[in-house]
Amino acid sequence: MTHAPPLEPGLVDTHQHFWWIGRHDYPWLDHAPAIHRDYGLEDLRSVLGDITATVLVQASPTVAETRTLIDLAGVSGGLVRGVVGWVDLAAHDAGVAIADLAAHGIVKGVRPMLGFIEDPRWILRDDVRPALDALARHGLRLDVPARPRHLLLLPELAQRHPTLAMVIDHGAKPAIARGEFEPWARDIALVARETRMYCKLSGLATEAKVDWDDDDLRPYVDHLLECFGAGRLMWGSDWPVVDLAGGMSRWREAALRLVPASLQRAIMRETAVAFYGL
Image (cartoon, rainbow, N blue to C red):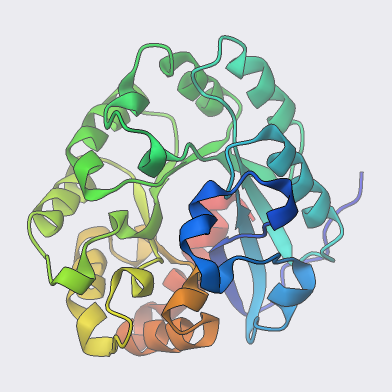
């Protein structure tokens, strides 16, 4: 077994992707021509700046993608420290697939693509429950790509699975471009208060208007800071999707301005290391 080198000082990016257009399993990219191309390790290295470790997250609901991400993590020289893959959580043999993934130390969790599932209560279905229990049993985490419509369901999810570590991706994607703060703010505060879920400070720039500035994002960032605190909030780039909103460096620099200096080490590094076991 090959062990990764020690984790270097620097920022930890908890949410980045790779994809390969020729595989034809990214239909959502058809609506994003600006990023409708292949993205791989060398593309990532060119935009890292002071990021020294990443968590690589699936962008396609396929086993093939997850296997490819595991392989890429293995040749990243210690840059990719964790993989969040995909499993069909409703499949009768999901537990077997989860056990197989857990055998790869680089796999830290899985993510169902809730935003593309019509039924908002899908994650609470009886046929999904055994797979979520298996995740907890194997020490894996659940990335929850919630939308605002899912938020009021999350306390029930957390109550059903008290030992499953969960993190909400992208702050549940508030409609920043439309200036909508409520009911998102009220609902995510309830989730933070009633559950032990973590949250990613990621994906906000792409929910804002194209010419966003710090003031557009500040109310949402401040609210997430107030709700989750530095101990349950972790930064992510959502690269290369963030290229639709000015790119990796623009969002990283904005986050460093918006997050108080006293909290930056936790949010930009330590919370991720603890949550994902990096």
